Image 1 (spheres, rainbow, N blue to C red):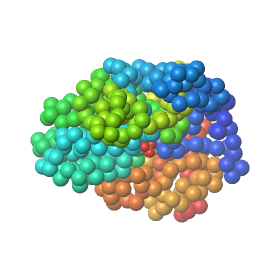
Image 2: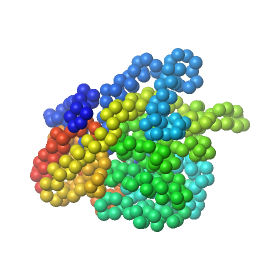
Image 3: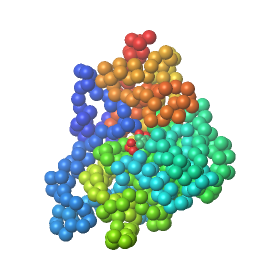
Length: 405
Ligand code: PLP
């Protein structure tokens, strides 16, 4: 399939000019483009079976329910979950993390004197929900420090685990630097210390195979739109026994067994955590995206993207004054700064040349503060990118730097 065999017709949005130049889309860590298979799955849903799910007796309601529940099975299989009941559809990673932080607070499992452990690499989505939990419960937020190369300080991590850590909430892959955390080892250490573990898989889902059973975490969240599915759909995987024991967060239709004005009994997981009409089409399209990825093979995708990132680093390193962030074996993203040039100016000029990259703090302000910077320029890669895209990135960056100096 690689390096050039992904037909452009699979991703019609890429077949266009921006400011008169071929579009080179390298903002995949923010969101990925959608293949025809996904667009068609959404369209087919609305053209043929659109209906509300679970309660209807008519044919369309049954067909939509089957398609939605089949999508849950596809996700469960993809994650190697023990059961589809462990798969909760959410609106995205942020929603999944907020769900977990809220049910932990409501359950009384985290109280005053407890500690919540996150890392310097986290996206704001895996910082702020825990700050809110700490404000509510009187728990303390602790942070694993980051080394100069953009990896986490593992000795400090083990020291921090000797405290009263109730949950470790950790990103697998850094969206800002592409750092791949040694999650298997870190989960093992946290579990031995008696902590729960939530993995933010927003940046790993499109690049690395995920096997929740071998990972050994308790929760894992990701967003559909970062793995070629639409926005507004995501997944929270949770360990069955925990989902069973923890209380619901949002109340409404779907999450109940029986309601009286005096008392309500709750549905079983995953429905207990899916109050209200869900994003039915989104779940179906997510399953189509997962099938698309698995048809190519996630390991092949990772190998292809690694080739591109290494080629990009090599080509860009010819620019005097360039500084890369994150360790050499990064995944998905390549972040850099050029001495004397503001990342925003560089990004703006690259856009004029048809190259879409992201500039700024990447929703990681504490990480930027750790490195004494306000942001970086980030090129992030997907399965449809090519060595031609890498050449365009390097040539246009050279040119833009020449114009800005
Ligand atoms: N976590 C990481 C590592 C991310 O990169 C992102 C988005 O960029 C998020 C969480 C939040 O994802 P979403 O906005 O889709 O909820």
